[in-house]
Length: 502
Image (cartoon, rainbow, N blue to C red; front, side):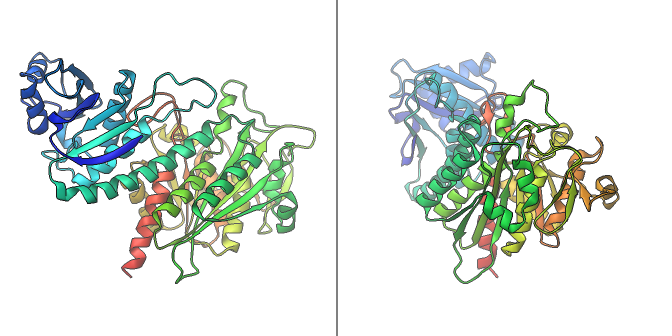
């Protein structure tokens, strides 16, 4: 979909639909909504008075113009309560009205800047949120089926002051890059596991690297054996698909050798291994590489936005399957840093492959390290599907990532890492074991990873909950969400800005 910022009067724009908005509790519309209402001879006011339009958050009310306006129809988007309005809610509103209008065969949509008047939202923030929400909300994975609806081809963001257009256009361009990166991650996750194998994931990463001039490396089984990555290779033993370890590097700051490290769990299918999962819902385990997809897509976006910062992504990728050669409970593995690991459950495999990835990140001198992983069902139970669980060994870094997520519209909640819980992953036959009991499972998983992050400032985000959605809501659709992409991009941009002010 093409998104343009134009100057004009929304009531005079020729489009399949024009979009205005209303806050909950408002009895008499103002601004652009009032102007459109007057052109419709008070149709919107009449519907408000009859409580057919309430302005509730996410509500989309359609009013046909019957030739009174150049637009075929008017959509009144509900913004919800004025005190709750923020950029992320505008993203959600845009996703809702775009999907509603797509179902009505609208190919060209014109919209005002929602919340930019009485709502108190900065015009630049509103424009970016509308563009991002529209692109994310209209995403659909239709590679293997015929689309239900035709795509929206064009969106016009209509403003009155011509002098504001250039800054809004820049905001829209950035929003497009970020939204398209999140959608790329969604597509990688939505692909079935027989197509998105570790080898195909490496090919996809190589394609992104070639497109955006990133340095790309891929390591095969023999390379990993030479590096001593026994934890990753242990997980890979059960599959006929060869494991891959890949890196993508962006260099935006030629003055420095320092680089941020983004890591993503890349289990392209997780059966649980010998500790096999129940068959119900196992098909969803094609998405156990959502963290890997997020970091790969984020690097592509960062390369397009060109911040003055260096970033390297590390992606360990393999399947976790049962077979005659598969890892068994009770086996002992040795990670890249020499630590031995007693395997309690082969279904706690994500932390094993990340252990070697974290060690490799330290070897490369990356700092800080941020890993994204659909790691534990325990975190999903604790926080539900709206929040990622954030764990860290560094308070300042944790705060930076939380704030980046807040700006990006990706919610996280910091979880504790009490030293007393280390007792739960203490092994009698190895340096550490890969699981404790059922209590505090997300915490013990993070404590396990911390052993391989060492003294490097590190954040782990457990995205098991928000990595997928079971329904359409706001700018989310059923399936993968691309959670983490926008936070990583925002974090990299903020670190670049921080570096410029030093």
